[in-house]
Length: 182
Image 1 (cartoon, rainbow, N blue to C red):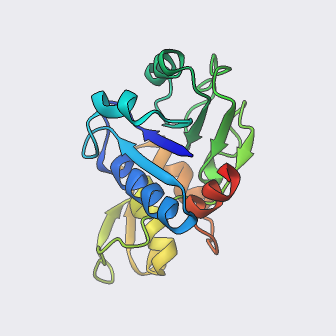
Image 2 (image 1 turned 90 degrees about the vertical axis):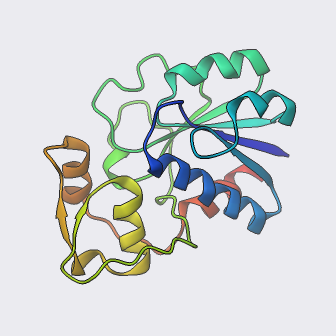
């Protein structure tokens, strides 16, 4: 099975890290996964890959046309977003929460643990200040340093929701997702 992770043209580095984590999990599971978007493979190479499934990252709206063009099913991966974010997302067969803060979004169909790049090399110093972005937060939980750093949100409701929801991890959502695909 060919699985394509696709992220929007304009996004932060965490989206690329999620793509890398999914490619790694695909290798572990024996599933061909390629990641397309900024910092990943060029999106114009997606049609030549002939995906059987598209994993759409967070900004699902512009990716819906890709599902139509390629006539393949799609699963949207959702971190915390405001109410109403999934309005009109019916074309996506599954709308999967990838962190506890997203579990409450109306329209979520499935829940998995956060997706983490298990080969991430960043390790902060104790007491270092970090933004509570998706990848930084969940890597800190996975690698066990969340409680040794100071978190800030820059006023972002998404980052505050993540801190408020907390959460522990014993499984990597990337591996859970590959198990769902098999």
